Length: 267
Image (cartoon, rainbow, N blue to C red; front, side):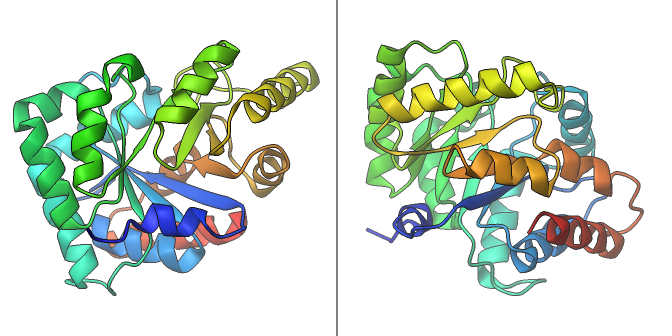
């Protein structure tokens, strides 16, 4: 079985900085240059969105990015082709960073679960985050993903009770993903002191009940917020702020430049 890059990375004693990017946003042809730029800028893991017409867990920025990605020709098959090119160094330097795909169940069911898992592994994908996939119904999916050498990540929220945190922790292959607040992406507000205190208490609760590592996403926009999350968790995810920074780009070269510029401010 091939070595999973996420598993290997999490064996290191380091805080993770994870980038979320929607492929082919804001212009077609941007994906490979942006992947290269994010890796150069210090992204430990790159989370790629699988665009879907009804992304229920995402806020307006990522929803709009998903619609633009679809207009620019992104399908599951097309996305896996882009990952394959990135790994092979076609149009960019060969990508070494772990790739985590984030998306919803319906497109995967249409593609065929078995075929998707096989093709994702062959393309060079390392992990999957499927927000609308219930952990309680995941046994068969987990078995098949493990057979392909893929890591599976499940979500924890501020209202997840301790016993369910333990379940999610046991099912997530390498780490869990904690939502900083109960909100869609890009709408979280963590600046308020009472909100920050609530997040701290919530993440302490996760730490007490999780044996594996966990990362935090939603509402993380700058280096100060990343360092705050690093003090409580094993990694931080930045997505909406990245998409907002590149949204006015007119060419793939400009998109990559803006992505690199923004990401370096976070490191």
